[in-house]
Length: 131
Image 1 (tube, rainbow, N blue to C red):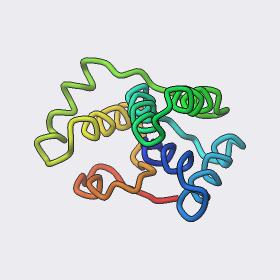
Image 2: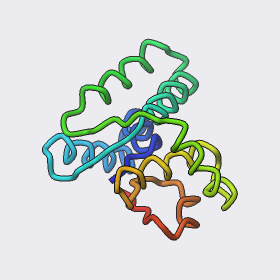
Image 3: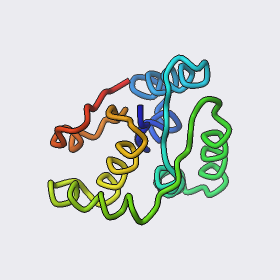
Image 4: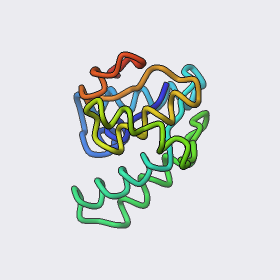
């Protein structure tokens, strides 16, 4: 399963509700219950979003460091080949970063994304799941 940025962001910023659900799923990753990947692009999104929402670079850095140290979470690099493949998902209506997430996950053989972003529902090659 590919873990989208909004899962980490909501886990960090919301005390209850979806925030709790996201933290519970992250615990499942750490326990090795779910093969999970994400990408360096997701880390960039989390870093930027947490800083914007909290006004704190220290908080943003701390959250990304926690993600980096999450056991059983594979963090994939992003390359030009994936970028080239992402164009068709961009043309299908995804934002550029989301299109690149799809290209990365499919290259890794992953067809499910954990995300609250319903835009992913428009891509037949993948399935979106919420925590």
